Image 1 (tube, rainbow, N blue to C red):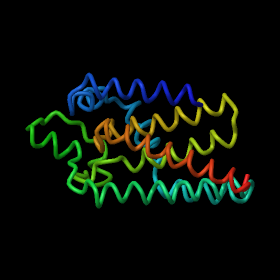
Image 2: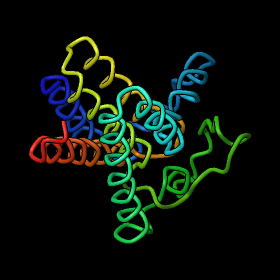
Image 3: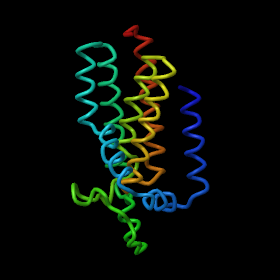
Length: 197
């Protein structure tokens, strides 16, 4: 898991270094097609709070300890994400506001017919925070290389979906992922220290 996450964060950092704000997001948005529309529209729900709550409850039925860990991780990461969005960075513009200001009209808004396009509270990405917190705690629990790669890949797709759907900048997803990983590792280590698992 560690190597997979290191690769993700190194590549993510390089994107932040070599692309100006909005460039990578525009490039991703311009790759839109019906296949990506389908994949990213549905994959983004893996970072939704409702999905995490339902999945944690399902896991509790079969393996209650990991279900409780997932629930605690989700609650802490969600609260921290909200704190940063609402209190620390309440005016952080979303890509829609940023591109509107630049008078760029070629943005493809897949979500415009289903939901409102958000213009503020961009940093960090809550969906990405939730996805990484959720899937990393599963990686720490399972410790199986095959599943680890799948979980991290799903978390990465959630992060990419937020950029593709023009809901977040890459920097929002990058730090959302860092926050999610931090919380999941912290909760996991504390649970081991308390001999919960």
